[in-house]
Image (cartoon, rainbow, N blue to C red; front, side):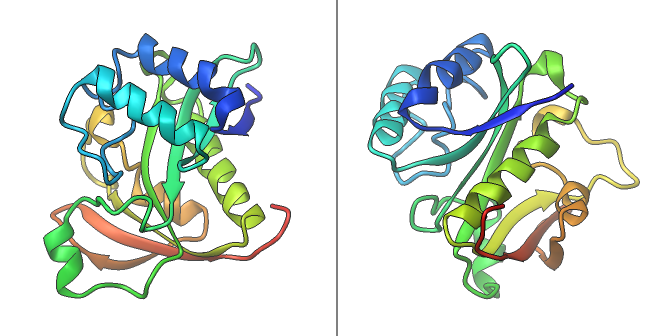
Length: 191
């Protein structure tokens, strides 16, 4: 299947909101606010409003994946560490911080009926293209190793280390039982 990648901006809000609503607010109403500064453990309604405000103000970044019919089926959220200060495994990360990143990839989401169809891969490629168009720089993520173990898809909201490695990322340091900081330099350009 062919996918179209769009930045999440005001013109794409309706497609993003439809995907989130179709999937019960994502992770119990997170609306992809969990890594932003604002408290996301409030309510789905407040998370939706805060996300929409950020989108309208151009203060959030995501590569939104649309199918052939123009329906959103997934995304990859990224941003500067200032935009997305929340990370998994913070305590282990802070013990020995990696080189400073310009960008951080924090989460992926794929509609449950469309998993295993390359949407996360398309979302990551789209995010890396968008980062290149925004000037590039060092990109980091904290992701899960799945090789040699059974991993529930719903817990892989940070994607897999193997997916990142397929896109030129290297493992920097282990920060959890299966979690690794991965990093890559993205050149500035037209993607």
